[in-house]
Length: 255
Image 1: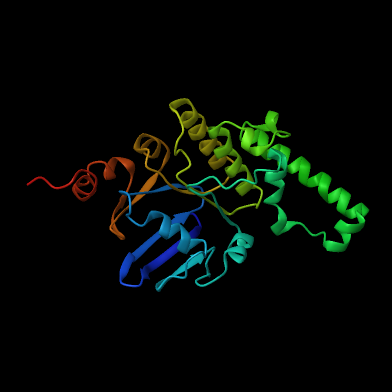
Image 2 (image 1 turned 90 degrees about the horizontal axis):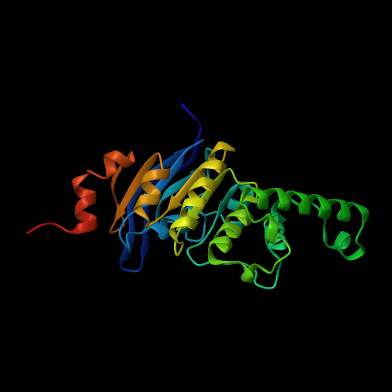
């Protein structure tokens, strides 16, 4: 059985009197593409925020690569190898496409402030290496030709790809994608699906949140379903789409 990359155990997240997550347990293993689905307000992004350290779980634990990281700060979790994208695009608007990707490499570059000020030989060599690595990542995402463009000049779908490229620059052990197909047209969504498969083939496990059911059902090996903060089902796409609790959560219960 493949290595467990991510494991959450009995996660509960309260905001005052509101219970956003209740007793949520799940795992992602090496080589998997796993989806988290559920109606609006089900708690999906809250779960991502707990996993990545943006929220401290009220109860329960998060383990990454077998290490308990509950309560860790986001930058420490990123340095351990867990990168995410967001529902709302968060690119640096005044930086080029390539420089946006390079910005994701800060957690594993070595040059300090003095090296940057005096532009030392080691700093120049490191900068060149970062540029070359960024270009290779941009080729994977099919946006290499735009590397010198400003990030905000890209079409919407390419901006989404650039966010993934920047996440890849952190050398992630797990890639967390928060609604990566949101706002994309059919062709852009198909291109994204091909890229996600390519990333899996390269060895990246992926955990994603998505509302596009066609995208999720075609790309994920297993799904977890949240509703009102509770995990109501898990299984393969074929199992999930005929699960009565899942159907009720999305369509409502017949009277």
